[in-house]
Figure 1: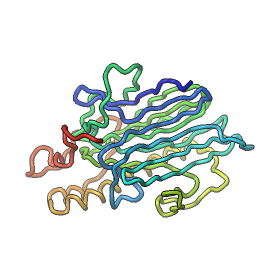
Figure 2: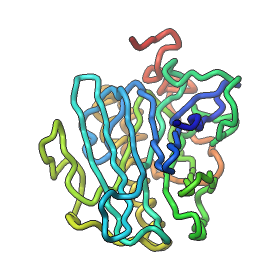
Figure 3: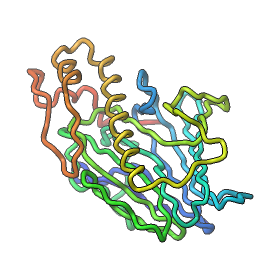
Figure 4: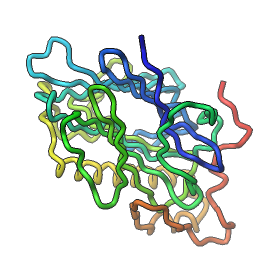
Length: 292
């Protein structure tokens, strides 16, 4: 029997907004399920965006493995029918597993697709009173072995969510740009991802593939990886914005010269323009929008 899903939420305008959930199977395998949003880029290929239907990530003991490995497999379904898959295999990781599962630079979460009842049981609240008009939420989802001490980093808040065989570590920070309907995501597979079952090496900035799997990373490695992902997702979002705001000089000026700052607490930083207090409002989802 599959256990009840654990929802991971933020509180925005007094309402729960579910970003993803995690389902634990009796075997201890975890499935991370992300809900579809308005527009999502992969962060490594930011020239266009797609509407995400669903994203599932399974974390499990590798079958028939002689190396005590763990596999993290991701399947992304886009509304145009495209299916993207990728996987990471981590050798000798039964005791000291540590691996980044997914990094998410959240879009505006007011879209109805993120609706969830406040009557849900035992949600994991990632952020209370999310000030989405002044900053964007960055979430790094990391899987860690039960008996491995979780690393702590200065510029990120850590939430530890225990499951039977794994701990899920949530590292959150706030980026000093307001949210729009665009979000961005990244992960770290150990072999080239596939798009509609065709290998697509250039889809991610993978400098080296590991066909036999990768080794467990250190705390120091994880810190560098999360820093890189944060910068890539910010740069990818800025490149995407340039295309949509090309006829708005004041916003282009903000995009070209804005320095990203990631912090544990929200920062009240907005671009100073004559377009109003929140010039990005036109790129927020409509309150009445509805997905089929």
